[in-house]
Image (cartoon, rainbow, N blue to C red; front, side, top):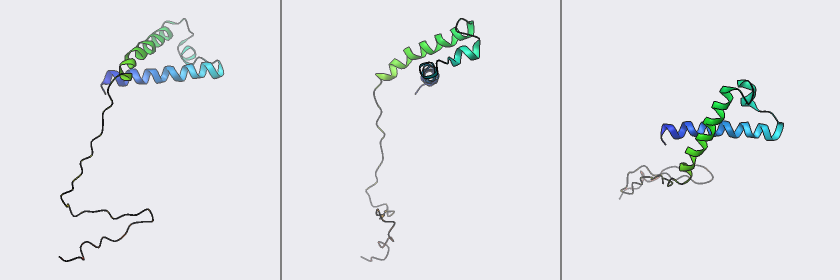
Length: 97
């Protein structure tokens, strides 16, 4: 994820928390910190949160990446014989072919 998307996501989360506080407690945290809803800094924060929401729309339509796990089936010798009840002793070293 690019840096701009991370910053936008953080600002969207801040906006979501602020809207949650407004909806539940009628408390506007941004307005309280920056001097009211009409204050210049509050309007800047509201604008940045709005722009961040628009940027995050691109994340909604971005393709999901699949994590690839490399599986070595060539007999690496480090087999895990664990069960749901605990680990069992690796007896493959005792077997002589």
